[in-house]
Image (cartoon, rainbow, N blue to C red):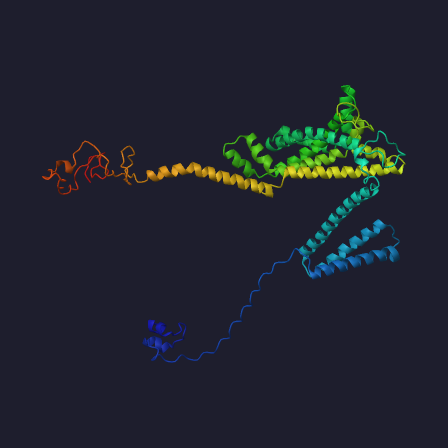
Length: 506
């Protein structure tokens, strides 16, 4: 194939005869016709590649909903047949358990008709998790609803929140007496417990997180063991040490000590887990900037884990505020209002509930359930306060924090502008000095270091060509002579041609 063939557009793979190749004929008009060859069958076209469609793992689908409803109906029918016709089973709990297990098995079979094994396991576990969450929510709603329903007779009365039981008896109506003494006692006891638990718990959690070692492992083991400590043991310890050993009387202070013993391991354990979640890069960056360990913990670690630490305090508070046996052993019981935690017995809401529901009188039982409802509301209020103090997670700001950060940014921008403006002016003034000599006087109008019209000439010990030229006769400016040669030595000027260090002329 020659250049001519390529220029005329001849196909490069055109067959040529052996005679033409031997004769060296390269012209396409004189080349003999190629012998006919049988047509080769065309290769089968490759099938078009189908686009990858990701499997949908979230959200309901039509087939999924139908499979779920069908499996539920089938599981219920299987339980009815087993408990009513085939097997001699009985009991409501067994009926629901059998129906649920049959539902799961049938749902796995129906899902396997369309999906693979991984999708079947995913769908079945999703149903199990939704069932567990629904059961927990139903249990919580049942407890709260039952307590509020049984206490509906006492809660509408205003005196229930403002009076104590000093002047009311079991046979008095609900319009007399209340639980104000128990509410105040609960607040005082939990305040004392929080004042002891929060500093000690957070300090111990920081120690376990920041100072690993043999002793920290021992402390963590003790904390984990104290998590399962029975509440009556904590009450007995405080009763033996504070009341029997030191001779103190039963009071709200002793009850606060007992409650703090129960809260302390919960707060330490939860805070330790939260502090482990703080990224190590934050502490490394702080220490790389030269911050000591205590400053890193105070300004980096604790603010980052603030939301989780608030949750840890909430968990400890919920554990301590509902304790009854430690309060019964250390605080005693009274029907009067006592605001002094160091003198005299004091009662809390759980202890009041325990004493109210023991009475056979309906009014006292209603007071007991009303006290339990007030206790749940108090826990909810404390939870809300802790969430407000703890704020959101790291990197998330509410509107107030965002506005405060914006104001701080504007103040910083103004301060930086005021600090950098003088520096920029000085830099622009000295930018034209290329010679590097900043001690020479400059003219007022010179931009690059040149003297102005009224500035005196620089005296560097040498005479300029103008000094050597003869003065004009009429007093005008002297005529200028020819320019100096290139090899003239100038030691003081910036544009001289002689190296001041070696003396060699350029």
